[in-house]
Image (tube, rainbow, N blue to C red):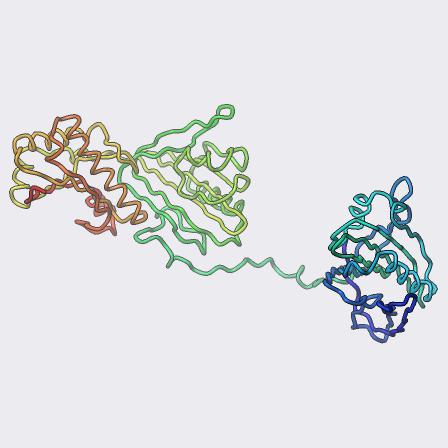
Length: 495
Protein backbone atom coordinates (compact mmCIF):
# COMPACT_ATOMS: atom_id res chain seq x y z
CA UNK A 1 0.00 0.00 0.00
CA UNK A 2 1.92 2.98 -1.28
CA UNK A 3 0.29 6.40 -1.50
CA UNK A 4 1.54 9.72 -2.88
CA UNK A 5 1.40 13.04 -1.09
CA UNK A 6 -1.43 15.40 -1.96
CA UNK A 7 -0.88 18.54 -3.88
CA UNK A 8 -0.37 20.93 -1.00
CA UNK A 9 0.33 24.59 -0.37
CA UNK A 10 3.08 25.11 2.06
CA UNK A 11 3.89 27.20 5.07
CA UNK A 12 7.45 26.12 5.83
CA UNK A 13 9.08 26.26 9.24
CA UNK A 14 12.80 25.59 9.14
CA UNK A 15 14.18 23.85 12.13
CA UNK A 16 17.95 23.67 12.37
CA UNK A 17 19.14 20.92 14.61
CA UNK A 18 22.59 21.12 16.19
CA UNK A 19 22.85 18.26 18.60
CA UNK A 20 26.40 17.12 17.83
CA UNK A 21 29.75 18.51 16.88
CA UNK A 22 28.94 17.72 13.27
CA UNK A 23 25.86 19.51 12.00
CA UNK A 24 24.85 17.17 9.19
CA UNK A 25 21.10 17.22 9.00
CA UNK A 26 18.49 19.93 8.57
CA UNK A 27 14.86 18.84 8.62
CA UNK A 28 11.95 20.87 7.44
CA UNK A 29 8.33 20.29 8.48
CA UNK A 30 5.79 21.28 5.86
CA UNK A 31 2.25 22.21 6.86
CA UNK A 32 -0.46 21.92 4.23
CA UNK A 33 -2.61 25.00 3.81
CA UNK A 34 -5.91 25.37 1.89
CA UNK A 35 -4.51 28.56 0.35
CA UNK A 36 -1.68 26.71 -1.39
CA UNK A 37 -3.63 23.79 -2.80
CA UNK A 38 -1.44 22.77 -5.78
CA UNK A 39 2.04 22.50 -4.25
CA UNK A 40 3.49 19.07 -3.53
CA UNK A 41 5.95 18.85 -0.64
CA UNK A 42 7.17 16.16 1.77
CA UNK A 43 6.49 16.31 5.47
CA UNK A 44 10.22 16.63 6.16
CA UNK A 45 12.87 18.07 3.86
CA UNK A 46 15.49 15.59 2.62
CA UNK A 47 18.56 14.89 4.80
CA UNK A 48 22.04 15.83 3.63
CA UNK A 49 24.24 13.91 1.19
CA UNK A 50 21.59 11.68 -0.36
CA UNK A 51 22.88 8.95 -2.70
CA UNK A 52 19.47 7.92 -4.01
CA UNK A 53 15.83 8.91 -3.58
CA UNK A 54 12.78 6.77 -4.44
CA UNK A 55 9.17 7.96 -4.18
CA UNK A 56 5.76 6.35 -4.47
CA UNK A 57 2.47 8.20 -4.13
CA UNK A 58 -1.20 7.20 -3.98
CA UNK A 59 -4.29 9.35 -3.82
CA UNK A 60 -6.05 7.30 -1.16
CA UNK A 61 -5.32 3.90 0.37
CA UNK A 62 -5.29 1.99 3.66
CA UNK A 63 -2.08 1.86 5.66
CA UNK A 64 -0.95 -0.26 8.64
CA UNK A 65 0.77 1.90 11.27
CA UNK A 66 2.91 -0.20 13.62
CA UNK A 67 2.21 0.31 17.32
CA UNK A 68 3.83 -2.78 18.89
CA UNK A 69 6.74 -5.14 18.27
CA UNK A 70 6.95 -6.98 21.59
CA UNK A 71 6.13 -10.69 21.24
CA UNK A 72 4.49 -9.98 17.89
CA UNK A 73 4.27 -7.03 15.54
CA UNK A 74 0.90 -5.28 15.64
CA UNK A 75 -0.49 -2.30 13.79
CA UNK A 76 -3.47 0.02 13.64
CA UNK A 77 -5.26 0.62 10.33
CA UNK A 78 -5.54 4.16 8.99
CA UNK A 79 -6.64 5.52 5.63
CA UNK A 80 -5.72 8.63 3.74
CA UNK A 81 -3.37 10.26 1.29
CA UNK A 82 0.16 8.96 1.59
CA UNK A 83 3.63 9.97 0.51
CA UNK A 84 6.32 7.28 0.60
CA UNK A 85 9.92 8.46 0.26
CA UNK A 86 13.06 6.37 0.60
CA UNK A 87 16.50 7.92 1.05
CA UNK A 88 19.78 6.06 0.70
CA UNK A 89 22.64 7.72 2.67
CA UNK A 90 26.28 7.14 3.38
CA UNK A 91 26.75 4.66 6.26
CA UNK A 92 28.38 7.43 8.32
CA UNK A 93 24.83 8.54 9.10
CA UNK A 94 23.72 6.08 11.76
CA UNK A 95 20.13 4.99 12.29
CA UNK A 96 20.24 6.03 16.00
CA UNK A 97 21.36 9.56 15.24
CA UNK A 98 18.90 9.94 12.36
CA UNK A 99 15.93 8.71 14.39
CA UNK A 100 16.86 11.20 17.15
CA UNK A 101 16.67 13.99 14.59
CA UNK A 102 13.18 12.93 13.53
CA UNK A 103 12.06 12.56 17.15
CA UNK A 104 13.28 16.09 17.90
CA UNK A 105 11.33 17.53 14.99
CA UNK A 106 8.17 15.62 15.90
CA UNK A 107 8.46 16.86 19.49
CA UNK A 108 9.01 20.47 18.40
CA UNK A 109 5.72 20.31 16.48
CA UNK A 110 3.81 18.96 19.45
CA UNK A 111 3.50 15.55 17.82
CA UNK A 112 2.56 12.45 19.77
CA UNK A 113 4.88 9.45 19.47
CA UNK A 114 2.67 6.37 19.13
CA UNK A 115 5.50 3.86 19.11
CA UNK A 116 9.29 3.70 18.84
CA UNK A 117 11.90 0.94 18.98
CA UNK A 118 15.57 0.34 18.29
CA UNK A 119 17.68 -2.72 17.53
CA UNK A 120 16.37 -5.93 19.13
CA UNK A 121 13.37 -4.14 20.60
CA UNK A 122 12.00 -3.87 17.03
CA UNK A 123 11.61 -7.63 16.88
CA UNK A 124 12.58 -9.85 13.98
CA UNK A 125 13.94 -7.63 11.22
CA UNK A 126 12.53 -9.71 8.35
CA UNK A 127 8.98 -9.59 9.78
CA UNK A 128 9.20 -5.86 10.37
CA UNK A 129 10.38 -5.27 6.82
CA UNK A 130 7.68 -7.54 5.30
CA UNK A 131 4.99 -5.39 6.94
CA UNK A 132 6.58 -2.01 6.19
CA UNK A 133 7.61 -2.98 2.64
CA UNK A 134 10.29 -0.27 2.14
CA UNK A 135 10.54 1.04 -1.41
CA UNK A 136 14.27 0.41 -1.37
CA UNK A 137 16.23 -1.30 1.37
CA UNK A 138 19.85 -2.34 1.42
CA UNK A 139 20.10 -3.91 4.87
CA UNK A 140 18.48 -4.86 8.15
CA UNK A 141 21.19 -3.86 10.66
CA UNK A 142 20.60 -1.40 13.52
CA UNK A 143 16.87 -0.93 12.84
CA UNK A 144 15.02 2.03 14.33
CA UNK A 145 11.33 2.83 13.99
CA UNK A 146 9.10 5.72 15.05
CA UNK A 147 5.39 6.16 14.38
CA UNK A 148 3.70 9.41 15.40
CA UNK A 149 0.49 11.41 15.24
CA UNK A 150 0.68 15.13 14.45
CA UNK A 151 -2.41 17.29 14.85
CA UNK A 152 -2.61 20.46 12.79
CA UNK A 153 -5.40 22.97 12.49
CA UNK A 154 -8.38 21.06 11.05
CA UNK A 155 -6.09 18.24 9.92
CA UNK A 156 -4.48 15.08 11.20
CA UNK A 157 -1.22 13.54 9.99
CA UNK A 158 0.56 10.29 10.79
CA UNK A 159 4.22 9.57 10.18
CA UNK A 160 6.18 6.32 10.08
CA UNK A 161 10.00 6.55 9.97
CA UNK A 162 11.95 3.31 9.57
CA UNK A 163 15.75 3.37 9.37
CA UNK A 164 18.14 0.46 8.86
CA UNK A 165 21.66 0.02 7.54
CA UNK A 166 24.42 -2.23 6.29
CA UNK A 167 28.12 -1.70 5.77
CA UNK A 168 27.72 0.35 2.56
CA UNK A 169 24.57 2.40 3.15
CA UNK A 170 21.87 3.61 5.53
CA UNK A 171 18.25 3.69 4.39
CA UNK A 172 15.38 5.88 5.58
CA UNK A 173 11.81 4.89 4.74
CA UNK A 174 9.59 7.89 5.46
CA UNK A 175 5.82 7.41 5.14
CA UNK A 176 3.44 10.31 5.84
CA UNK A 177 -0.32 9.84 5.87
CA UNK A 178 -2.78 12.69 5.71
CA UNK A 179 -6.14 11.56 7.05
CA UNK A 180 -8.87 12.68 4.65
CA UNK A 181 -12.32 11.63 3.61
CA UNK A 182 -12.17 9.05 0.85
CA UNK A 183 -12.45 10.95 -2.47
CA UNK A 184 -15.49 9.55 -4.24
CA UNK A 185 -15.78 12.16 -6.97
CA UNK A 186 -12.95 10.85 -9.17
CA UNK A 187 -15.33 9.17 -11.59
CA UNK A 188 -17.91 11.34 -13.36
CA UNK A 189 -21.14 10.10 -14.89
CA UNK A 190 -23.03 11.08 -18.00
CA UNK A 191 -26.75 10.43 -17.52
CA UNK A 192 -27.46 11.38 -21.14
CA UNK A 193 -25.51 8.29 -22.26
CA UNK A 194 -28.18 6.02 -20.79
CA UNK A 195 -30.86 7.69 -22.87
CA UNK A 196 -29.03 7.07 -26.16
CA UNK A 197 -29.10 3.87 -28.19
CA UNK A 198 -26.09 1.58 -27.92
CA UNK A 199 -23.81 2.32 -30.87
CA UNK A 200 -21.69 -0.28 -32.62
CA UNK A 201 -17.93 0.11 -32.81
CA UNK A 202 -17.03 1.12 -36.36
CA UNK A 203 -14.48 -0.94 -38.30
CA UNK A 204 -12.75 -0.21 -41.57
CA UNK A 205 -12.77 -2.39 -44.67
CA UNK A 206 -9.64 -4.56 -44.69
CA UNK A 207 -10.41 -6.67 -47.76
CA UNK A 208 -7.33 -5.23 -49.49
CA UNK A 209 -5.27 -7.40 -47.12
CA UNK A 210 -6.84 -10.65 -48.43
CA UNK A 211 -4.58 -13.54 -49.37
CA UNK A 212 -3.97 -13.29 -53.15
CA UNK A 213 -6.65 -15.15 -55.10
CA UNK A 214 -8.84 -15.70 -52.03
CA UNK A 215 -12.55 -14.92 -51.84
CA UNK A 216 -15.52 -15.40 -49.53
CA UNK A 217 -17.74 -18.43 -49.99
CA UNK A 218 -20.89 -17.36 -51.89
CA UNK A 219 -23.05 -18.77 -49.10
CA UNK A 220 -21.70 -16.51 -46.31
CA UNK A 221 -20.27 -13.00 -46.37
CA UNK A 222 -17.41 -12.07 -44.07
CA UNK A 223 -17.79 -10.21 -40.79
CA UNK A 224 -17.18 -6.47 -41.41
CA UNK A 225 -13.54 -5.48 -41.01
CA UNK A 226 -12.22 -9.01 -41.52
CA UNK A 227 -9.64 -10.06 -44.08
CA UNK A 228 -8.59 -13.48 -45.37
CA UNK A 229 -5.26 -14.53 -43.91
CA UNK A 230 -5.24 -18.09 -45.30
CA UNK A 231 -7.31 -19.78 -47.99
CA UNK A 232 -7.65 -23.19 -49.61
CA UNK A 233 -10.09 -24.33 -52.26
CA UNK A 234 -10.39 -27.72 -53.99
CA UNK A 235 -12.89 -28.87 -56.61
CA UNK A 236 -12.75 -32.29 -55.01
CA UNK A 237 -10.84 -33.39 -51.96
CA UNK A 238 -10.97 -34.82 -48.48
CA UNK A 239 -10.97 -33.01 -45.18
CA UNK A 240 -11.14 -34.10 -41.55
CA UNK A 241 -13.44 -32.52 -38.96
CA UNK A 242 -14.06 -33.12 -35.26
CA UNK A 243 -17.58 -34.54 -35.19
CA UNK A 244 -18.09 -35.71 -31.60
CA UNK A 245 -16.55 -36.69 -28.29
CA UNK A 246 -16.46 -39.95 -26.34
CA UNK A 247 -15.20 -39.38 -22.83
CA UNK A 248 -12.11 -37.23 -23.23
CA UNK A 249 -11.40 -38.39 -26.78
CA UNK A 250 -12.69 -36.61 -29.89
CA UNK A 251 -14.13 -38.53 -32.82
CA UNK A 252 -13.24 -37.32 -36.30
CA UNK A 253 -14.89 -37.72 -39.68
CA UNK A 254 -13.41 -37.55 -43.18
CA UNK A 255 -15.67 -35.72 -45.64
CA UNK A 256 -15.26 -35.62 -49.43
CA UNK A 257 -16.41 -33.00 -51.86
CA UNK A 258 -15.76 -29.46 -52.98
CA UNK A 259 -13.81 -27.80 -50.18
CA UNK A 260 -13.57 -24.12 -49.33
CA UNK A 261 -11.45 -23.42 -46.25
CA UNK A 262 -11.09 -19.75 -45.20
CA UNK A 263 -9.23 -18.31 -42.21
CA UNK A 264 -10.13 -14.70 -41.35
CA UNK A 265 -8.27 -12.16 -39.27
CA UNK A 266 -10.84 -10.09 -37.36
CA UNK A 267 -10.80 -6.69 -35.62
CA UNK A 268 -10.17 -7.16 -31.90
CA UNK A 269 -13.22 -5.01 -31.14
CA UNK A 270 -15.24 -8.20 -31.67
CA UNK A 271 -15.42 -10.84 -28.96
CA UNK A 272 -15.03 -14.54 -29.68
CA UNK A 273 -18.59 -15.04 -28.41
CA UNK A 274 -19.99 -12.44 -30.84
CA UNK A 275 -18.30 -13.97 -33.87
CA UNK A 276 -19.39 -17.49 -32.92
CA UNK A 277 -22.97 -16.31 -32.33
CA UNK A 278 -23.08 -14.66 -35.77
CA UNK A 279 -21.96 -17.87 -37.48
CA UNK A 280 -24.60 -19.78 -35.52
CA UNK A 281 -27.37 -17.38 -36.52
CA UNK A 282 -26.38 -17.28 -40.22
CA UNK A 283 -26.08 -21.06 -40.63
CA UNK A 284 -29.35 -21.63 -38.77
CA UNK A 285 -31.12 -19.30 -41.24
CA UNK A 286 -29.71 -21.42 -44.08
CA UNK A 287 -31.19 -24.56 -42.52
CA UNK A 288 -28.01 -26.09 -41.10
CA UNK A 289 -28.24 -28.33 -38.03
CA UNK A 290 -25.51 -28.22 -35.39
CA UNK A 291 -24.04 -31.73 -34.94
CA UNK A 292 -21.28 -31.04 -32.44
CA UNK A 293 -19.73 -28.15 -30.53
CA UNK A 294 -17.20 -27.44 -27.79
CA UNK A 295 -16.10 -24.24 -26.10
CA UNK A 296 -12.89 -23.29 -24.27
CA UNK A 297 -11.54 -26.12 -22.08
CA UNK A 298 -14.29 -28.47 -23.28
CA UNK A 299 -12.21 -28.71 -26.48
CA UNK A 300 -9.05 -29.49 -24.53
CA UNK A 301 -5.73 -27.74 -25.09
CA UNK A 302 -6.12 -25.61 -28.22
CA UNK A 303 -2.88 -26.79 -29.88
CA UNK A 304 -3.85 -30.44 -29.48
CA UNK A 305 -7.49 -29.88 -30.46
CA UNK A 306 -6.54 -28.05 -33.68
CA UNK A 307 -4.71 -31.15 -34.91
CA UNK A 308 -8.04 -33.00 -35.07
CA UNK A 309 -9.12 -30.93 -38.08
CA UNK A 310 -5.85 -29.38 -39.39
CA UNK A 311 -6.92 -25.85 -38.43
CA UNK A 312 -5.89 -22.83 -40.47
CA UNK A 313 -6.80 -20.41 -37.65
CA UNK A 314 -4.49 -21.33 -34.78
CA UNK A 315 -3.38 -18.17 -32.96
CA UNK A 316 -5.05 -17.89 -29.56
CA UNK A 317 -5.61 -19.48 -26.17
CA UNK A 318 -7.45 -22.56 -24.95
CA UNK A 319 -9.95 -20.46 -22.99
CA UNK A 320 -10.99 -18.43 -26.04
CA UNK A 321 -11.84 -21.17 -28.59
CA UNK A 322 -15.32 -21.87 -29.99
CA UNK A 323 -15.80 -24.88 -32.33
CA UNK A 324 -18.96 -26.02 -34.12
CA UNK A 325 -19.74 -28.60 -36.83
CA UNK A 326 -22.96 -28.35 -38.91
CA UNK A 327 -24.68 -30.28 -41.67
CA UNK A 328 -27.41 -29.53 -44.21
CA UNK A 329 -29.18 -32.31 -46.12
CA UNK A 330 -29.92 -31.58 -49.79
CA UNK A 331 -31.20 -33.81 -52.60
CA UNK A 332 -28.23 -32.85 -54.75
CA UNK A 333 -25.72 -33.64 -52.00
CA UNK A 334 -25.20 -32.74 -48.37
CA UNK A 335 -23.33 -29.62 -47.31
CA UNK A 336 -21.15 -29.47 -44.19
CA UNK A 337 -19.86 -26.42 -42.36
CA UNK A 338 -17.21 -26.12 -39.68
CA UNK A 339 -16.60 -22.90 -37.75
CA UNK A 340 -13.73 -22.25 -35.36
CA UNK A 341 -13.12 -18.99 -33.50
CA UNK A 342 -10.04 -18.34 -31.38
CA UNK A 343 -8.30 -15.27 -30.01
CA UNK A 344 -5.96 -13.75 -27.47
CA UNK A 345 -5.61 -10.31 -25.93
CA UNK A 346 -4.32 -8.64 -29.12
CA UNK A 347 -5.77 -10.78 -31.89
CA UNK A 348 -8.82 -12.67 -33.13
CA UNK A 349 -9.26 -15.23 -35.92
CA UNK A 350 -12.04 -17.38 -37.31
CA UNK A 351 -12.12 -20.29 -39.72
CA UNK A 352 -15.01 -21.25 -41.99
CA UNK A 353 -14.77 -24.58 -43.78
CA UNK A 354 -17.52 -25.52 -46.25
CA UNK A 355 -17.66 -28.99 -47.82
CA UNK A 356 -20.17 -29.56 -50.62
CA UNK A 357 -20.68 -33.18 -51.61
CA UNK A 358 -20.09 -33.71 -55.31
CA UNK A 359 -18.95 -36.50 -57.61
CA UNK A 360 -15.33 -37.18 -58.32
CA UNK A 361 -14.54 -36.54 -61.99
CA UNK A 362 -13.16 -39.91 -63.05
CA UNK A 363 -12.68 -38.73 -66.64
CA UNK A 364 -9.23 -37.57 -65.60
CA UNK A 365 -8.13 -41.20 -65.51
CA UNK A 366 -8.45 -41.62 -69.30
CA UNK A 367 -4.75 -41.38 -70.08
CA UNK A 368 -3.44 -44.04 -72.49
CA UNK A 369 -0.03 -45.05 -73.77
CA UNK A 370 -0.61 -43.88 -77.36
CA UNK A 371 -1.89 -40.50 -76.20
CA UNK A 372 1.06 -40.12 -73.85
CA UNK A 373 3.53 -41.01 -76.64
CA UNK A 374 1.94 -38.56 -79.09
CA UNK A 375 1.87 -35.73 -76.58
CA UNK A 376 5.54 -36.10 -75.63
CA UNK A 377 6.56 -36.40 -79.29
CA UNK A 378 4.67 -33.20 -80.16
CA UNK A 379 5.46 -30.95 -77.18
CA UNK A 380 8.17 -32.64 -75.14
CA UNK A 381 5.95 -32.78 -72.07
CA UNK A 382 2.59 -34.05 -70.89
CA UNK A 383 0.34 -33.16 -67.94
CA UNK A 384 -0.70 -36.19 -65.94
CA UNK A 385 -4.22 -34.98 -65.24
CA UNK A 386 -5.21 -38.23 -63.56
CA UNK A 387 -2.74 -37.89 -60.72
CA UNK A 388 -5.01 -37.27 -57.75
CA UNK A 389 -3.65 -36.65 -54.30
CA UNK A 390 -5.39 -36.64 -50.96
CA UNK A 391 -6.48 -33.22 -49.71
CA UNK A 392 -3.54 -30.94 -48.99
CA UNK A 393 -1.21 -33.95 -49.10
CA UNK A 394 1.45 -35.64 -51.20
CA UNK A 395 -0.20 -39.04 -50.73
CA UNK A 396 -1.44 -40.52 -54.01
CA UNK A 397 -5.05 -41.71 -54.06
CA UNK A 398 -5.47 -45.39 -55.07
CA UNK A 399 -7.08 -44.59 -58.45
CA UNK A 400 -4.05 -42.47 -59.42
CA UNK A 401 -1.89 -45.58 -59.72
CA UNK A 402 -3.54 -46.40 -63.06
CA UNK A 403 -1.98 -43.25 -64.50
CA UNK A 404 1.42 -43.98 -62.93
CA UNK A 405 1.27 -47.43 -64.52
CA UNK A 406 0.79 -45.93 -68.01
CA UNK A 407 3.74 -43.55 -67.43
CA UNK A 408 5.89 -46.48 -66.30
CA UNK A 409 5.04 -48.43 -69.46
CA UNK A 410 6.11 -45.47 -71.59
CA UNK A 411 9.40 -45.07 -69.69
CA UNK A 412 10.18 -48.76 -70.05
CA UNK A 413 9.52 -48.59 -73.81
CA UNK A 414 11.85 -45.55 -74.08
CA UNK A 415 14.73 -46.46 -71.73
CA UNK A 416 17.16 -43.98 -73.27
CA UNK A 417 14.92 -40.99 -72.66
CA UNK A 418 15.26 -39.09 -69.40
CA UNK A 419 12.52 -37.01 -67.79
CA UNK A 420 11.77 -34.45 -65.16
CA UNK A 421 8.71 -35.11 -62.99
CA UNK A 422 7.51 -31.58 -62.22
CA UNK A 423 4.88 -30.67 -59.60
CA UNK A 424 2.60 -27.63 -59.92
CA UNK A 425 -0.10 -26.01 -57.73
CA UNK A 426 -2.67 -23.26 -58.05
CA UNK A 427 -2.01 -19.96 -56.23
CA UNK A 428 -4.05 -20.66 -53.09
CA UNK A 429 -2.02 -20.61 -49.89
CA UNK A 430 1.43 -19.20 -49.35
CA UNK A 431 4.05 -19.30 -52.08
CA UNK A 432 6.63 -21.12 -49.99
CA UNK A 433 4.03 -23.67 -48.88
CA UNK A 434 2.96 -24.29 -52.50
CA UNK A 435 6.58 -24.79 -53.54
CA UNK A 436 7.15 -27.41 -50.84
CA UNK A 437 3.85 -29.21 -51.60
CA UNK A 438 4.52 -29.36 -55.36
CA UNK A 439 8.01 -30.72 -54.71
CA UNK A 440 6.65 -33.42 -52.39
CA UNK A 441 4.02 -34.47 -54.93
CA UNK A 442 6.60 -34.73 -57.72
CA UNK A 443 8.79 -36.87 -55.45
CA UNK A 444 5.79 -39.08 -54.64
CA UNK A 445 5.26 -39.82 -58.35
CA UNK A 446 8.98 -40.51 -58.88
CA UNK A 447 9.05 -42.84 -55.86
CA UNK A 448 6.01 -44.73 -57.17
CA UNK A 449 7.65 -45.16 -60.59
CA UNK A 450 10.89 -46.44 -59.03
CA UNK A 451 9.52 -48.55 -56.17
CA UNK A 452 6.30 -49.92 -57.68
CA UNK A 453 7.24 -50.24 -61.36
CA UNK A 454 11.04 -50.71 -61.27
CA UNK A 455 11.93 -47.58 -63.28
CA UNK A 456 15.63 -46.77 -63.04
CA UNK A 457 16.27 -43.81 -60.71
CA UNK A 458 18.55 -42.21 -63.30
CA UNK A 459 15.69 -42.00 -65.83
CA UNK A 460 13.51 -39.63 -63.72
CA UNK A 461 14.32 -36.60 -61.59
CA UNK A 462 11.70 -34.70 -59.56
CA UNK A 463 11.24 -31.03 -58.77
CA UNK A 464 8.42 -28.66 -57.75
CA UNK A 465 7.59 -25.23 -59.19
CA UNK A 466 4.67 -24.36 -56.93
CA UNK A 467 2.29 -21.78 -58.40
CA UNK A 468 4.77 -20.20 -60.83
CA UNK A 469 3.82 -21.99 -64.08
CA UNK A 470 0.01 -22.01 -64.44
CA UNK A 471 -1.63 -23.29 -67.63
CA UNK A 472 -5.01 -21.70 -66.86
CA UNK A 473 -6.52 -18.84 -64.89
CA UNK A 474 -6.48 -19.08 -61.10
CA UNK A 475 -9.58 -16.86 -60.94
CA UNK A 476 -12.02 -19.80 -61.20
CA UNK A 477 -12.25 -23.38 -59.96
CA UNK A 478 -11.84 -24.94 -63.39
CA UNK A 479 -8.57 -23.09 -63.95
CA UNK A 480 -7.28 -23.92 -60.49
CA UNK A 481 -7.96 -27.60 -61.15
CA UNK A 482 -5.87 -27.50 -64.32
CA UNK A 483 -3.03 -25.79 -62.51
CA UNK A 484 -2.89 -28.49 -59.82
CA UNK A 485 -0.98 -31.05 -61.88
CA UNK A 486 2.17 -33.12 -62.28
CA UNK A 487 3.97 -33.02 -65.62
CA UNK A 488 6.36 -35.40 -67.32
CA UNK A 489 8.98 -33.26 -69.13
CA UNK A 490 11.44 -34.78 -71.67
CA UNK A 491 15.09 -33.84 -71.08
CA UNK A 492 17.51 -33.11 -73.88
CA UNK A 493 20.66 -33.60 -71.77
CA UNK A 494 22.28 -36.42 -69.84
CA UNK A 495 23.26 -34.44 -66.73
